[in-house]
Length: 214
Image (cartoon, rainbow, N blue to C red; front, side, top):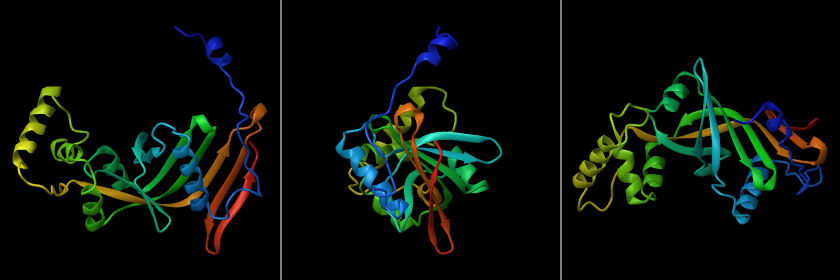
């Protein structure tokens, strides 16, 4: 078992890049897109993965995948009867976190989530692999299962139900959310823990940008 001293000794220096006033974009969504492109070019595993934190009394966090950026909002898809969806229904204020360890970068986002319209949901669902479409119908996310066999049996039933049907529609319990950011913070690791941090906050006249102490 690792000791506290062993854990405390794990340390690395961040030297790969810097972020300053001359290079950061004036709009945080533009800057986020630039960093996403960097992560994709660098072949970072799951570059669109983001932690989603909700709080409907007790805070919870899980990973989801960014699937679109439209009108300044970040989109992800899920079962809208899931635990995360129930939490959002109670409190739509959420937080997102991108972390690209290979690039020594992270982006924190605070904003408000709202359901996507069914037309947008259907258009994205049509792009999913058939196996993922079947899975969306078979899995009632966050509900208890007696065994793996129960899930596999549900998959087989759905495959049979849609056999010979080319276009599978999204289930009524499957949808998506758009998160409108109100705060976006960029973190670039630097040597000696003197990291570069910039915080954008939405105001009535646009985005206010501030450099933060590390």
